[in-house]
Length: 108
Image (cartoon, rainbow, N blue to C red; front, side, top):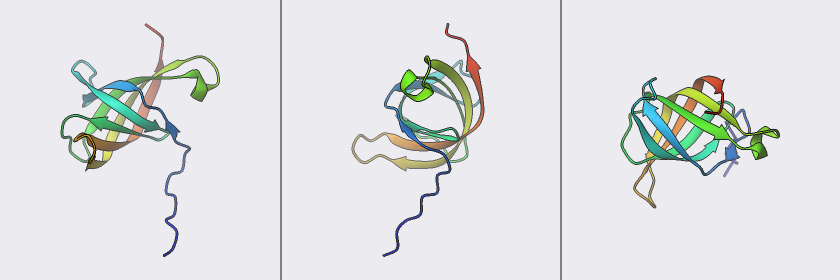
């Protein structure tokens, strides 16, 4: 059987941290999620509720010094869902999204 070719263009960082996500572009109504990994172009996380493929998603996360190699940096992102799967072990939705926009935000 031939080896599966890696399709990712950017390095992924396993980052198991909680993150608040919002459906759409406003962060006013957010729900908790568990981040699985992140790269410069995408994010993978677990949600408690169903979301449609192609749906917009917004979130703010804090990248730790282990990734930034400086101080912690907060990043606000807008993304689009590209894959949704039911996670077998915990009943959550495993979601992959492409980051379409991001901005660095000051610590509050």
